Amino acid sequence: MGHLRFKKRYVMKTILIIFVICHLSFFFYSCTAIKSTANAVGGSVSSLFNSPRKLTERITDPYRLEARLSVLWVGHATTLIQIDDKMILTDPVFTTTVGQFSKRLVEPGIDPKNLPDLDAVLVSHMHIDHLSPTSLDMFEKKIKNLLIPQGGLIYIPNYNFDIIELQTWQSWEKDGLKITAVPVSHNGWRYGLDEAWMETSYTGYIIEYNQIIVYFGGDTGYDSTYFHETGRRFPGIDLALLPIAPIHPREYSWKRHTDPKAAIQISQELGAERLMPIHYDTFPESLDTLGEATATLRAEMEKQYLTSDQVVIIDIGEQKVFIYRKEEKTSL
Image (tube, rainbow, N blue to C red; front, side, top):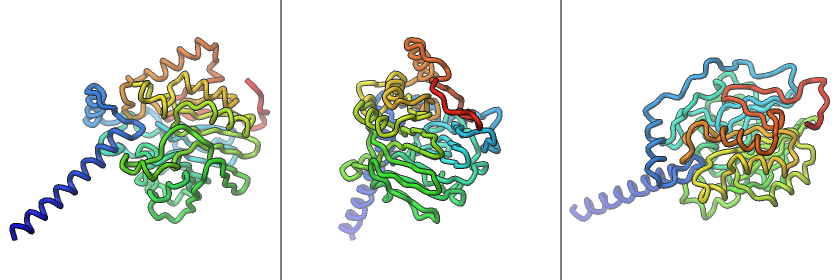
């Protein structure tokens, strides 16, 4: 009996250790990762005791009759894109926390019950702040197709909608809507421990419909080769949705996260007409302070003489029409 009790305690201790390692992996290896500094950990923990800031007004009917291209920023990398009659949602996260450690600073820019029927939902990679099955559960009946990077299916529960894995440069097309997986510099594991076999499950996307082209970067570091090649293959990108945080610590972040300067560079290498920044001021972002990403972006815009038509900064919950009906596509 003593041997059995010892064995049971050993098994339980092992399970507890694995549980703790997995949760620490969530904390230290997600896109909003806190990289072993007391100040950053303190900021993330303190947010757990505060409620997300409420928006004064949230859109309840996001379909814009006057729009050929519009984007509603829900927060972080979650955007609702309208191209004519097609609706596309990116990296949907509507939960209050991700990974039980990182809590939203601002409520989502739209209530999930007010989402329209979605022609496509795009997931760029498996990190907990980009793939949220709990969020997908909130509006499962509105999803027609879910697109994920190669190898990501293992982390997707069973749903009634179609789920499509795409390899780099592979396209999916339905009713004129074409979506292509394009290379980015990031990683695709979910728990840290699965890094060895989740080597392909991260991507960016090109969205094409009725001669309008949108680039969604998801989350990426800077690699000039990738973006030049994407721009070469897809000339005339109307809008690039690009992350601008976390900025710090740069020596750690640069390989998989763009700062504002790199986001502008990427947009230019893509040949995009407009850049809209995402992935900031929604969850605690490493060592960044609230508002630092946009302040840095505006300073970089001033250095490069870029206008607010070229780099379009909007608030969470705001919807911007980029191309109106009966308006011809023109270079800025």
